[in-house]
Length: 451
Image (cartoon, rainbow, N blue to C red; front, top):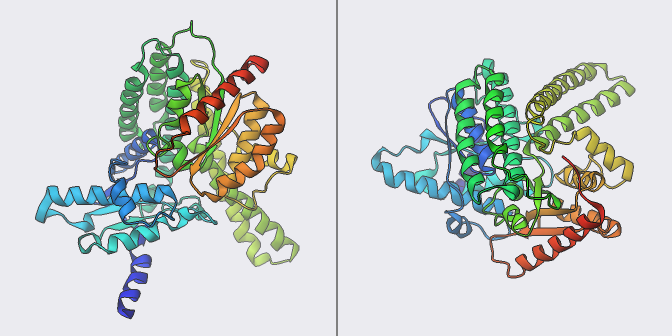
């Protein structure tokens, strides 16, 4: 028994981390469909055999090997990897080699259970003798998702630039989808168009990501936006505008949230979901904040031996954040003249919003920082309602609800909590219909934000 425990702990340290992706198949779970495929294209551009796994079909497997107390995305992603590996083993037979695969499961610091997914999934994989040698490649928000050891050192920085840009472009394609679909001339045309556009942009990142030929990628994006604009029926009047915040996986994984955006659209909404780039910017911004705090403290205490280290971090993370802002602005400036898409919030502005209204602190961390401030921005910008999407029992999103619901009620702006755990909720449609009725009344009284 002691030997088994020791082996388990060794597996957590030896088989979870940052491993070279050279000559491996890198398995990317599908969180945001567009984002996963564009990120895979960026990886392939740098010679990594990256593959986006199918999702949600293995949910029964995920539930079989979890207790139900885990965060729902843990069940989904556990099922995804188990089903993929089982199918791969059945397909390849004796040629199946678990050492050829690395499963991508990043993590986050802080009290969120997301930080424990890869540890738990390591234990699950180790319970299958044939899967024990499948490694879990993990990046962490603690170092702003650095890639040390996964990509060749001399190419890692270029890859981070291409990967971040793929996140920005994926966000824009998502916002293009949500901008067009409520107003499409022909029902169903937008979904097919966005699916084709996703594959086009994934190919663009595979072709031009490593070359950092971002102008070529943006040129292809402009063509897509122009084509998408033609799908809009200008005779359909504007609809109530709804903003979504919440836990990043649930609000972007359409299977897990039971396609909540499409349901909202069915009852008369135009929806804008918080972006994934916002989270990436937040992790970098938080590192700048922490480095500045360390610098100030050590200057006050005359610990000059540590001042140099913190100053270096401030410059390094600050440079990364500046680069991210430049690329974000570059992309939106290219598409906004073509179509009025919703832009992104600056994380520094979101922190100022929290401080101004004394609602929450970035010192506490988690996605509650972004969700609370994001709802406040939706409110100030003239949105007609906000939806908080999250896994059942998610602590950061419960905090968001406890702080924002009284404020939204006081301001008479519709607010809806939308927790999910994979079960059928018989009152879900009634709740959304009621929410959208309230949003439409708000729209009639106050109008709505212009993008």
